[in-house]
Image (tube, rainbow, N blue to C red):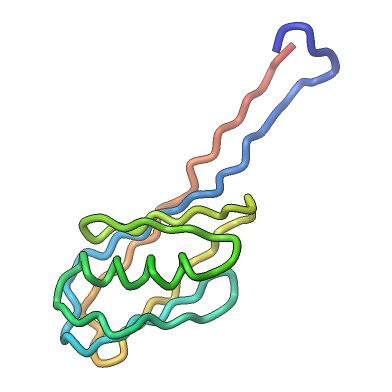
Length: 116
């Protein structure tokens, strides 16, 4: 930041989180509920006993929301807050069983300090 005066610290906000689904759902009739930023959402029926299909259903719900986008691959959902707000996601539950494991990654923030 050469030429910029008065700035001693700069922090970049993280607006992406991942959720890893590591165990297949118990049945093909499962729906998955989760809480995103204080609101509960529920997927359509997963229709296949795979983590990939579960991740696809979660990302489909998130993509339908204003201000968020999501991708899924091999049981991992990557969520982006398009408006740069925080992403708080958790409280995953399945409708017919509790066989899947959901792991939410921490933010990977970047800080820039001593920019003098």
